[in-house]
Image: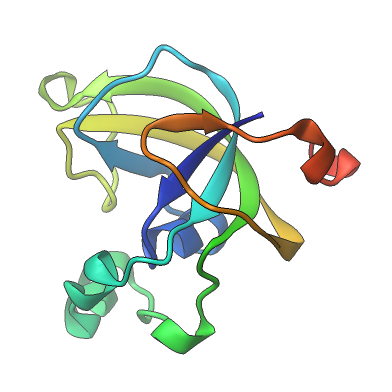
Length: 133
């Protein structure tokens, strides 16, 4: 199954907070189930402002210690991919330049430790709980 490594808190937001857009600098033709891997890097988290999260997203920024890192944490459906110039997706989560439209977030009951990679990468189906295929 294909997988995408995403920094926290964004991986958490996709599976638990209604983040229906993943912003990337590149597009993909792939559509279908996509595993979400939570990366270990604290870079994106450190750049977040808790006040901005409350204002923009209407939720609290979760504490770093409460976020899973270095593991596959769930699966979503990658529905479509749009360039910022098309302005197809209107969401508080939209930042561009490419927006990947996401649906049907399904967090795993237990994280699956796994090393993330750049771009889309393959994960053996045998690692993923059968109910999530």
